[in-house]
Image (cartoon, rainbow, N blue to C red):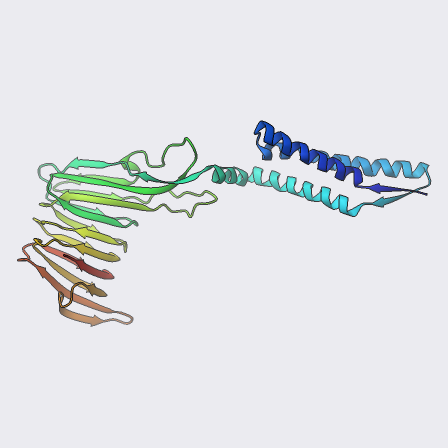
Length: 305
């Protein structure tokens, strides 16, 4: 009696076909995924034809049909992989995989903002958004913003932020210049966390008053030689860097932690709530002609030489 082993031919063809695909992709630098998507269905055709062929001839001859399970499992594995590739391609995930492989993470310069404050402007109202920010006073009569952000980009593609309007809103109403940092576009790529890191520095003329809405973000303040008052509300950690010739009074209200050189803060009040202790304190340097008021923040830390 003759024995027919169904699956052996299919496995042989699979190995030959897979080897050819790999060789062609190496020689021609063709996309391996594209070749596999067009090649693997042939395996099922060969395996089906092999089964039908042996069943047909087993009726005419005194033969016994035996299925080569190992070979059939191998062919099935390749077929399952092919089906998975088709599903990934149809759902768009394969495009994300390709983009993730070809992309790279870069630190990119923010589109710069530089504008004269103009006559009649007396104060700046700033919404810092959800990103940490450094704010300095400057001697020039210009409001400037510069910085960097991180993004994952494909080769030969432009940055997500092409102009200042992509991350910044600036509006003048009366004697006030309103500045708001927008939330950056969310990247939904396979390797992306969904957010982008942004580090920016804002420079405003020293003679302008400044009001900051912190949105629980961390701020670095460098008042230098202030000629007006600043105020900060609802921030996270506020670090204030002073100079030897700074002339400033820091008035902290409703703050959980006050830090600085020993005995530098004069505590005026401590109020205990259900889960925290809110502190009020005064820090003076120089005559204190100009005031930095910090309200409802977590921490205020003063640095000076």
